[in-house]
Image (cartoon, rainbow, N blue to C red):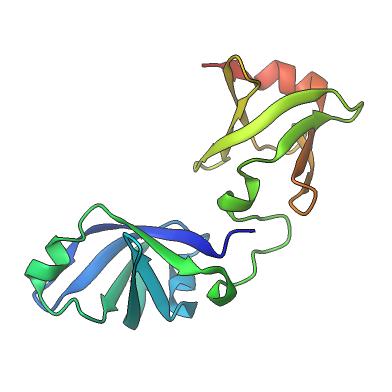
Amino acid sequence: MREKLVIGQILKPQGIRGELKVKPLLDDASDIKSFRTAFVDGKEYRILSARAGGGFAYLTLSGVADRNAAELLRGKEVEGLRQEAPAPAEGRYYIVDLIGCEVVTKTGVRMGEITDVLPAHTDIFVLSDGKKEIMFPAAEGVVEDVDVEKKQITVNEKRFNEVAAEQ
C-alpha cells in the first residue's frame, strides 16, 4: 500500500497570513485535523494548524508565512502520511487502495482493472479492460465485495451490465 494519501487540493490563500483553503478529499473535512505533516509537490511541511468549516479545510503550513507564499501553492494536491490518517469507516476505502484492483464477477470472469474513482454521491469507478474504459457506480447491488488486501472487487455481472457505460 502507498505510504502517502492525497487528502486535498489547495483552492486559494485564505487571508494574509499564509493560511490555505483546501478542498478535502476525505469523508469528513474535519479528518484533516489528524494529520501533522503535509506534502505539496513532494516538499514536506509541518502542519501548524488545521480547522474545518463549511465543507472545506483550512491549513497553516510551516514555511508558508504570507499570502504570496500561499498563492504559489494554489491548485496543488496535498498529501498526508497514511499512518496519520484516520481508519476509514466500515465499507469505506481510500481511493488509492482501489486503484489497480482487479474487477471480477462472482463466477470469476475478469472484467478489467480500476484506473480511477470519480468522487460523487455514489462514487463512479473507471475500469479499463485493455481496449476501452467502462464507468460504473459503486452502488449496492453492483459491487458485492471489496478486498483491498487481495486487490479485488467483485461485482454482480447482471447489475454491472445494466448500469455500466462505455467511454
